[in-house]
Length: 282
Image 1 (tube, rainbow, N blue to C red):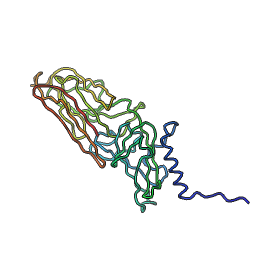
Image 2: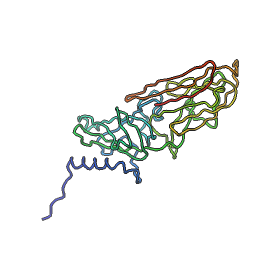
Image 3: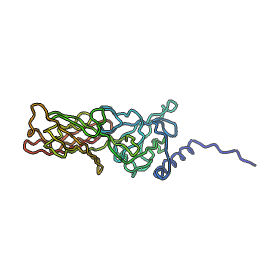
Image 4: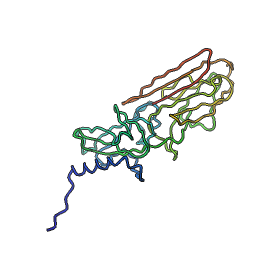
C-alpha cells in the first residue's frame, strides 16, 4: 500500500533552518548571494541594522539606524541588529540574535564584529534554542577609502587656509566601489605638522585639521594596515604667521556602544613642538 507523503511539521522546518544556518561558514566557497533586504530568510520577521558607533558610513551623522540594510560589512566593522516579527507573529516573545559562527562574526555585549570575509548567518533564536529566522550577512575586505569634506567627496587634493580648519571623514569601499557598513577605528596623521595639525574631531567623528603655515603636506587615514594618503595644501591666510600654530601629538576618538554612539577625544597640545596623529573610531 502506498503511503501518503508526509507533511513537514514546524519542528521539521526549524531543524532544516538550523541545518542551513550551521552551513553558513561554508557559504564563501560558492556563489551564495541572498538579497540585501531586511526581511528574514524564513519570512517570519525583519532584521534592523543599527550602527554601533558614529563612524559607520551607513548611518547619517547623529543617527543610530542605517538608511537601508547593508549590502556588506567591512572586516573589523562593528554593528548591531534588532529583530521584529511580522504582524502574524507579533504576539510571540522577541528572539535572541546570535552568530552562527563566532569565529566569523563575533557577537558580544550586543555588538557584532565582522572577522572574516564571506557569508555568515545571524540566527534569531527563541528562549528554547529554536531557530525562528535567519539572515545571512556578507563581510568584505576594504579595497579603498572615499574621503569627504563635509558631504562632498574630495578629488586629487584638499585645501585649507593657514589659521582656518576643515573637517575630513572617510568611508570604506570594497573592490566593486560598494560602501561597507560597520564602525571602524580610523587613524589620521599629518606628514608635516609644521604645515597642518589635527586639533580634534567633530560631532560626526570627522577629523578636524587646521592649517598652520603655507605649504604642502599629506593627510593620511588608516584602518589597521590599510592606509591612503590625501594631498593637503595650506594656503596663505590673512594675518597668519608661517611659524605659529598649535600642535597635537595625538588626537584619539573612540566609539563603542551597543545602543548608540559614544565618543572620547584625546588631544595633546604643545607650544614648542608640532607633531600630529589622530584616531577616530566607531
